[in-house]
Image (cartoon, rainbow, N blue to C red; front, top):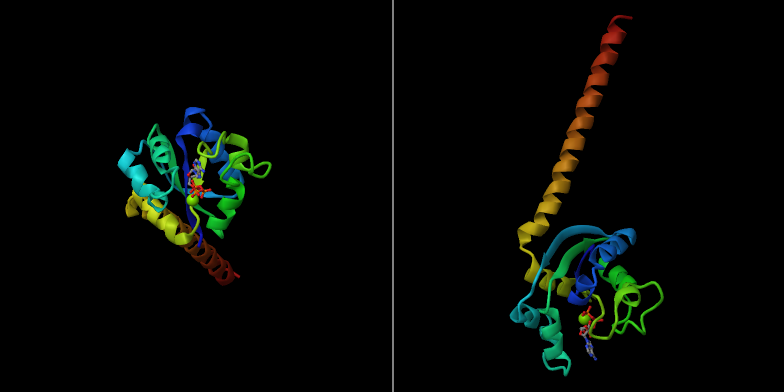
Length: 172
Ligand code: ATP
Ligand code: MG
């Protein structure tokens, strides 16, 4: 699909790197469809990382993710999930490839600066913890109304020139 979900984690927001990370995403060809800076409660974080509830790193992960503001975003690009995972890099910043966001801004396996959804289905489940459907649909509605206004504008312009042309023809 063309949409994915990302979240700049509390470590990166505390280090004041969130604007740089958003710019990194934009430079990589992503468009921001929805954006929200807020604090997750422990319950929100538990729900968000529910797939890891039996792992030994779950409790400290929940503490970390609810320790301060995060920046959540829905992103648009062709083949969005795979493209985002590629520029985010491996879970452990030390193992992440040169130039990836985790290599640049992560400091430890837990404090790895950013989350990226791993499938279209998970992206949808994850962004619904942070956004309402209206937050996402408004973007689509905006691009649709822009399309309509450009379309109608072109139609009137061509009608105008066509009528000028017929006036000129009649005048010989
Ligand atoms: P994310 O889901 O956040 O994009 P990921 O898919 O690369 O990261 P997961 O295996 O889903 O990695 O782990 C979720 C998060 O839990 C990691 O991003 C990291 O913050 C934390 N984590 C994972 N493994 C460990 C570990 N061994 N020790 C501490 N924290 C860990
Ligand atoms: Mg994951």
